[in-house]
Image: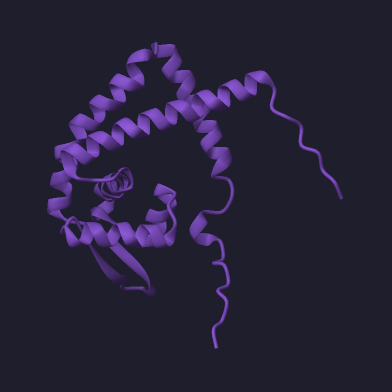
Length: 168
């Protein structure tokens, strides 16, 4: 059965390209700042920031992966790097031996506190300074709806893992 997809119209295409360009430019600037001020990647900052905001500074690894929208293996690798720097700890979950609990350390909290002012400055300067108050409300509303739509599917951690080929 052949299914023909309707092309994006000029307005949709323009909005899509603008969103992608803004997102890329902002992430690049944030990455540069985080590397310079904290020797952190963007995803490492996201991990630390989410843990800092979590109750008791702890989250299950799967919840963390869903929150930062990162693969299980990629998050495991990044968590290993953060653990080597004593920014987090990983321990088995007391109620489920298959789960891992990630906890931010005092050193990790300190690093977030160190890089946060510069992070806020970059975001404010590049994103918010160009918006009027009404634009900010509209942007928040629109992006909130899009996020809800995109997150309506089950989280990545709930999806079954791809079967691996068996070796003899």
